[in-house]
Length: 460
Image 1 (cartoon, rainbow, N blue to C red):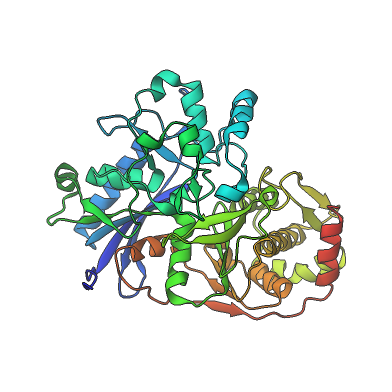
Image 2 (image 1 turned 90 degrees about the vertical axis):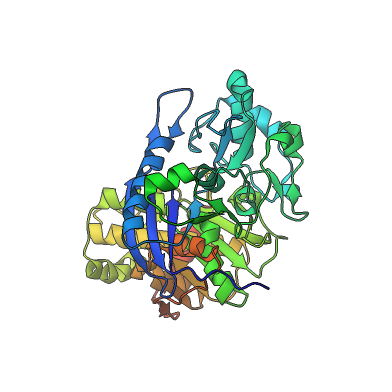
């Protein structure tokens, strides 16, 4: 077996739902040594809400140009949010805008799609709201915009759109095909029956491994960036699976990973698919090696943003001190702040016993809410072993302590914000570099068991 290339620095284009960034990672330390970030905006005009692709492209080229000069990089990898696909014309350009997955379709189109989609037992992909099933997006685009869709020659998953734009090589990849798209059968490792029902099999780009180098940066783009050598571009990976990858490489199952961003995605590594409940946002994702992984999720990062803006800034020591009074007074927030998904999809948020509550108490109740939602999600997938939390929530000490107490087992926090970027960098063949971590062992919180029971009972 040939030895993997010895890259010193890897540039990663990392496009999340809220922000897009370009980072350069040192392969020896795993540290982020250069970074640039921009907002991922949605354009509301036109045939439907769409991502500002040209703005992201311009930002990415400018960042790569800057980083080519200093600190330099030897390879490029890509990770993006899921629930998106790019529709290309014969010349390789976009035939239709890249649809924002938060756009909701007319009822008659939703009903027609519901009648088309395969059963959960085939795809392990639950019916989602808006365009969170990529199959629903493609059905909408094909049904509502027949003239535009007639120009589509190739369909590619979203990370691979960017890899293709850099290299000229079109591809699809399993982690993006397997993240609640309705398009993939994780048991057989093949496209689902929906692909033929939609009549798009001939449009789907060839499937490549996330670990494949698709090719070097195209010469004209390389010249614009200022590259002085051929730089390989790797196929790319769905962002939550990028966060999962370092743990698959470094840890032995069973364990759980809680990947936090706009979404909180939970993986039960070493679990099985038998008891997943599609009505509660439990599903199978497909990891970088093509294996099905029991998963669940809720829109926790978005909820945190909404609640934090409402509550305002609170000193962390005040939040920690407020947990006891909040639990004792049964001050609680019931789901959902961001409606339509998660383990309790039909509920709308409601505060209980919150009259006269201080900002610190509301903030503590928010942390308890997020921990209870995470526990519920992990229970749905039968997650066992230690719980690894990565991303922004790994900095929230109150959340981490409550989660450890609820789960009754260790919670390991990885506070670096580059979990997705580090995972994408591993596609190039480098080994994961161990980063700083904090371990939270379960410690009793007085009244927490009764609080948890009251929280669930309030939703009964």
